[in-house]
Length: 192
View 1 (cartoon, rainbow, N blue to C red):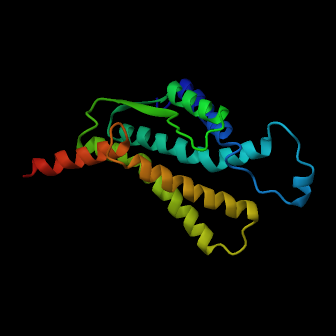
View 2: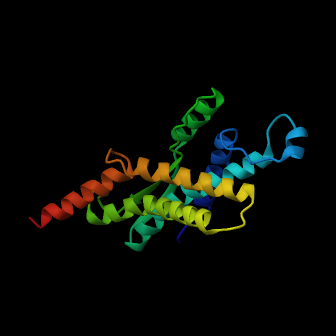
View 3: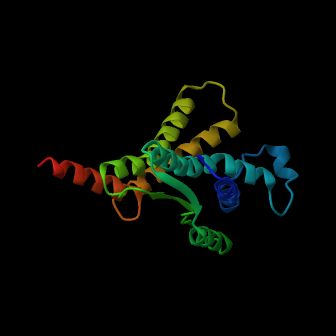
């Protein structure tokens, strides 16, 4: 079985949590009419926009790790990191000007993550972020008739994926970059 009901449930929780956490930081563009009649309280339009812009970057990143591991014949299971989600919720609730989000991870068994196989699996997540940012940038620079909402969504998608790519590629454990770096180092040093 490629995925379980628990993993699907966790991915749904992750998607909703990310949308909630970024609501307020990311707002759907409004026209004059919507600004005048804006309701107080939780804004579902901002929530949906935040999910659209942020969730693919995180969810597809984690799924890339999972499917890369499965391609190597390994067992990979997506898990929620409750402590990481709790920290993000706490930072949102205190209106922190920055967020630290580590909402989930893929548990992989069957290999050391500091090998060439581990490096490929670790790079799969940031590679998705790189693909998403290149795609968003390409659409932004080539499309001629984007709405304001589409342009803002693509711009934010590009920015979020740049940040996730750079952050995850830092060679600091437990980030993906450390697994890529040490996996490549071990592979290259084996030849010398």
